[in-house]
Amino acid sequence: MTPDRFGRPLTSLRVSVTDRCNLRCSYCMPDEDYVWLPRESILSFEELARLVGVFAGLGVQKIRLTGGEPLLRQDLATLVEMLHRESRITDLSLTTNGVLLASHAGALKDAGLDRLTVSLDTLRPARFAAIARGPRHDDVLAGLSAARRAGLPVKINAVVIRGVNDDELEALLEFGRAEGLEIRFIEYMDVGGATRWSRDQVVSRAEMLTRLSACFGPITPVEERATAPAARFRLADGTTFGVIASVTAPFCATCDRSRLTADGTWLMCLYARHGVDLRESLRGGASDDEIARTIAAVWSGRTDRGAEARLAVPARGALLAREELRADPHQEMHTRGG
Image (tube, rainbow, N blue to C red; front, side, top):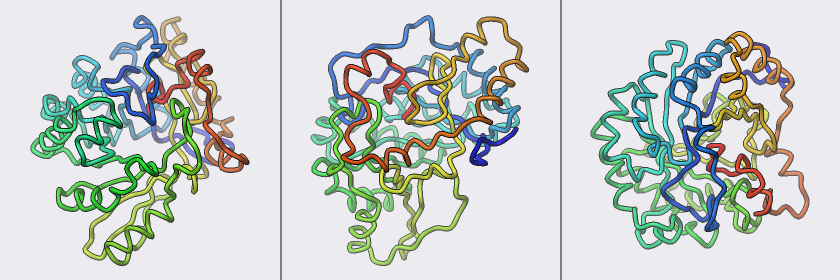
């Protein structure tokens, strides 16, 4: 398929299976009430598998299942098995908060899941309860253990917020080293429900590396393909970790990914204000070829470089106000698969 206006191919697709979540993390879902996607608008497994097949025919090779919390979607392993049958997909992964993982890890592995990413922002149970608004820290740790027993490779995502959990950088990296899990630190982003975001809460990649180097010694970059969101680094003992620096060092120039919400809205960028409604085509009788032509036409005209545009904003604040989120649930991070 023709690449976008900046020469970026379409090779990676994040597929949200639900906008619901069983946690209320302060940087993602800080309010009490939410406008959810209508139940009848949520795509069935068959519809999701059909769209993935269309995207695969256009060059997509990597699928990441997201939410909300994807394990809230009943019988998710069935969808994994359906997508695993698509031979053109070479990498099938899942991002989860880990709360329900202990009871699903084995089935996901058996269904054909290749790897997992689990969100874990703190090693302290009381702090976890404060950040996530739920005392489920032990459940996440149990899920990690179950995933390892099932033979699933696991990475840990930790959103780093100054004054909230930035004092755990070293402990989280040590935890990953001890458990054989690669940690990925994420700069606190100003999207979706992060309506209280401010620039002074962001711990930059440069600061993280300086602090980690002071604790663990020399850190060297890992040279690899440029399209991955995380820049990876290696300690002297071979331990690797990643940093996703979307705020201070955006990777828009090589971004090859797009997002499909649970109701079939296709988004070109995490910062995109609008998307393309593919559900209407699916349920309106369009053929796979017709849907593919729509996708190809939109992607070939793509110019999105959202994080770079935000980097240039003076006196930068949160991207969206609470009122804008209530007016359109597609703007929420838990809807577009943050």
